[in-house]
Structures are given as structure tokens and as C-alpha cells.
Image (cartoon, rainbow, N blue to C red; front, side, top):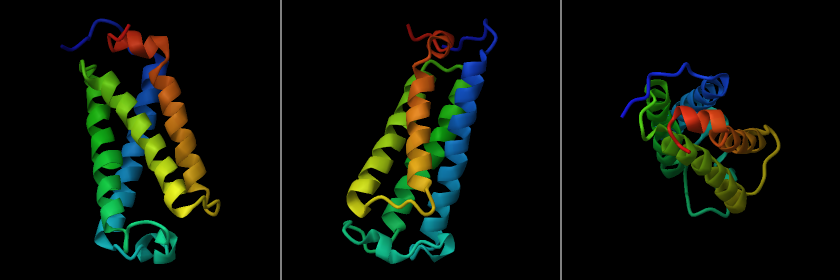
Length: 143
């Protein structure tokens, strides 16, 4: 069921922008890791994977590409169309991103240079907060 009656509030546009940013980032990073599982394309040494169950970046790249790249793009479309599943999709993206960063820090430690873990962890938390804003929930028929 689509809801096309009310104009989109700024909070919904903000959410859509964040989701689109995450989707593009995930597509870029995931594709780069799948194309070059050594991580050299993104200047990520294989030594970053010490302590993880992975020998190279192929599996993390596939997960990044699909869960945090393709899926957010689909959710962006759902938000634009105000599909009845879009709110749950946006919630899932935010939780998936928080879990991704948390597991990454747990497995390989925190890396502050560059501060990507901090930036994307913060993005996940901000996404979660925006998803819960009443105007977003109302627009997407979540009460």
C-alpha cells in the first residue's frame, strides 16, 4: 500500500539522503573489495584482517555490497514511493550498519586513520534516530 497524500517532511528527505549515501558507499566499497579481495584498490592491507576468520576481503566485500549497498538502494526507492515496507527496511539498514561496524571493531579492532569506523558507526546511530522520528513514522504509516 502506497501513501501519496501528505507532502514528504524534511525528516523523510534527510532519511532518504542518509540511506542513499549509505547505499552508494556500500556499492562502491563492496564492489572494490569483490574486484580486488586483497584490499589494495582501497589501500586496505590484508593485515587488517588479522584476528578475523577471513583470509581476504572477498566475503566481507560481498556482504558489504549486498547488505549495505544494494539493500539501502532498494530501501531508498521504497522510501521515495512510501511503500508499506520502507520503514522496516530503513530500520534494518540502520541496525545492519551498527552491527557491521560493531562486529568489525570486535574482530579487527578500532582503526582511527582514516576514521571510517567512527563515521559509519555514527551514520548508523543517526539513521536509527531519524527512522524513529514521529514525522517519519507517520509518513510511512508506522504509529
